[in-house]
Each structure stands twice: as structure tokens, then as C-alpha cells.
Image 1 (cartoon, rainbow, N blue to C red):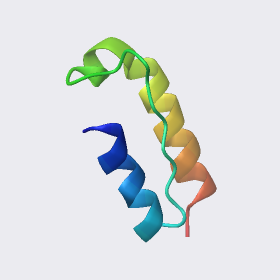
Image 2: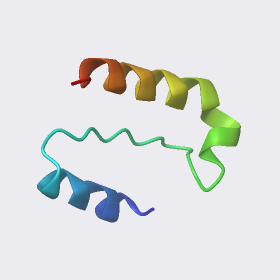
Image 3: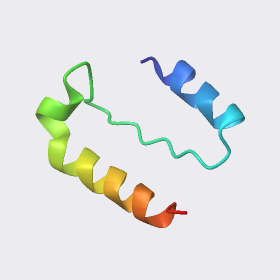
Length: 49
């Protein structure tokens, strides 16, 4: 999604995190799977109920 649209989530979801990949695109998981998985795991571990 465009950066502006992604940033809009931060207004509505105060606990959200936004990580922008300079060369990310439609196939982000194909090109950056390890980094996305690490960021996702870290976020989920810090936000468990």
C-alpha cells in the first residue's frame, strides 16, 4: 500500500508499528521474508495478552 495509506493506520491504532521497506513492494514476503517474520514475531511477543 502507499506510504500515506499505511501511515493512516497509526492514527487509529496507537499500538501499531509501521516498518517501511525502501525496496519493498507487492512481493515483500518473497524478497524480505526473514526480516518481515522477525519484525512480526517481535511485535507479537511484546503484545501478548
